[in-house]
Image (cartoon, rainbow, N blue to C red; front, side, top):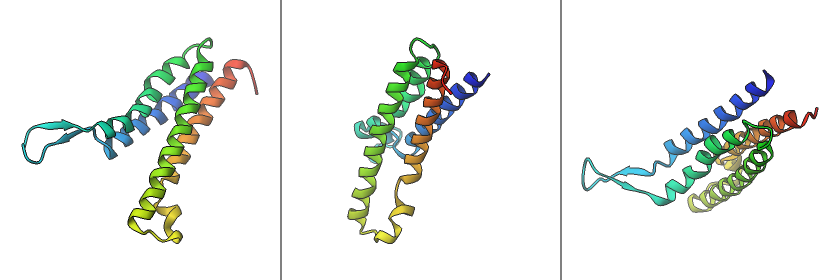
Amino acid sequence: MIRRALLFTLFLLALGGLMFHYRIHPFMVADKLNPGTFHFEGTFFLANLFPFIDTVLVTILFLSDRTAVYGYLLNGLIVIFGTIFMAHFSFATFTAQAIPPSQWIIKSLLPDIMIAWADFFVGKALYDFYRGGK
């Protein structure tokens, strides 16, 4: 029962991240010059790729105790890359928009980074459960 709850939590965190990324970075964008048509935005697609892999592949890997180690590894890599990308984007935004240092925490992607790390620690708990750890 605990394993299912952790797996479901991991899936929901990843799915929420994917939905949030797609809302912020839609990769099929309406063309303003040609109403009714869309164009593909490759950069935004890449922003959605990591959450998609997290939602689908990491969840599948955590379904079995034989592949849980790979799910744990992939989940960790995604969180590390996501942390680096989001922190970089925050700092780039601060300099581009001249945001004062007093507002850096509130205007940063730190809450999003914390959610990504929560996803990692749920994956760690699930991995520890498979290994019989406490």
